Length: 283
Image 1: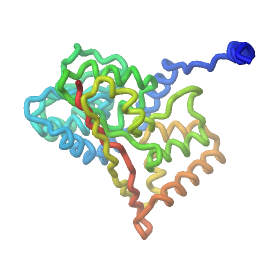
Image 2 (image 1 turned 90 degrees about the horizontal axis):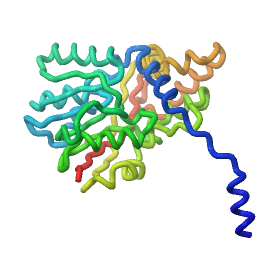
Image 3 (image 1 turned 135 degrees about the vertical axis):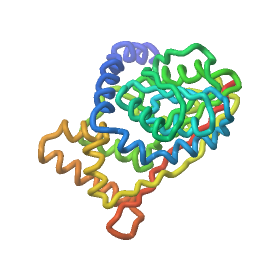
């Protein structure tokens, strides 16, 4: 019996490994399309809440990974921290730079890949990411990079959409119409305590994870779909990959999804979007 099992295992074809480089290139094109800053600016409160959860102190060196248009970066700068904002989409960093200038905040900006951060070991007191690093194709490598550049005794703060929350279900709905790359891990895994423990627990003295809600407020569910279809890269690219009838089907499903979560009680859209707020104490 043992021989049969062994033979069967050996004859079974190996699972295809995902082409992480190709996935990253496709993702970079998606995030470079549209104008994520128009979405990101509505999420500013999440960066402020995360900085409070981290109990930031003036003078601490803070790295924002996959910063987008700088929500967490700006929040940390408002608390007199020494901030470096990074992203692999230069246009988004320019939007963050403009916001910082408008608010009279001083911080640094650097183009960088979350999976290969161009910083020395233990460079930062605090490393943060809000709805950014969770989209990296190589999740373990990105987590390892955040740990590497965070000093022992420092903190890592994350805000990640959960699988069952509104945005997690948005990506699940899109996946039914435009299948994700074979073998790619769901970004929403970053919104689960189990996956966070897998990636960070070995080098953490403590991990605190709590569900939070960001409320999406739009004039109507249809307005939200149109807005995301125009400005939010992953949704824009999903529609672009479909023909006319398939686009209509996706749009209908997204309006229905918003309707399921909507608690406005009128024609407007008031949708709680669950995310996991995580504070990791680096060992």
